[in-house]
Length: 154
Image 1 (spheres, rainbow, N blue to C red):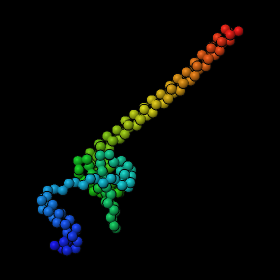
Image 2 (image 1 turned 90 degrees about the vertical axis):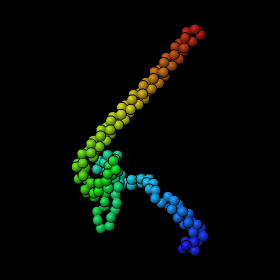
Image 3 (image 1 turned 45 degrees about the horizontal axis):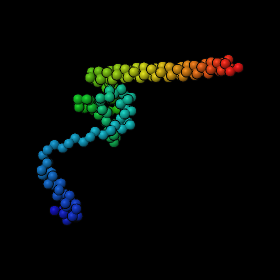
Image 4 (image 1 turned 135 degrees about the vertical axis):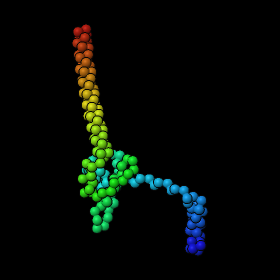
C-alpha cells in the first residue's frame, strides 16, 4: 500500500515481486556466479604456491588483520590471515598433494614448451638451409646455361 502511494510504476513493480515471491519464495535461490579473483588474491596465491584448483579470497577488516579464506576443490573452507597462510602450506596433506601435482604438471608443460620451441628452431634452420640450397642450385644452373650459350653461340 505504501509503495502504491509513492509512484504508480514502483507500486506495480512491488506488486509483481510480491506475486513472484508468493509463488516461488519457498524454492532455493540460484547460486550467484563466482567473482573473479582480485590481483591481490592472485599474487597471494602465487606467492604461497596455491594449487590451481584451490581458491583464495581476501576480506579486508578494520583494526584487524585481513581474513583469508581458502576454498578446497571439495568446497570446504579454511579461515586464516595472510601470515597464517604462509605457515599453513605444510600442514594439510591434501593441500601438499595438490601442490605437488600442480608443480609436476607445470614441469611437464615447461618441458613440452621447450620441446616445441626446439622443434620450431629446427624447422626454421631447415627452412633456411633449404632456401640457401635452392639459391645455390639456381646460381649453378644459371652459370651452366651461360657457359652453354657461350660455347654454342660463337
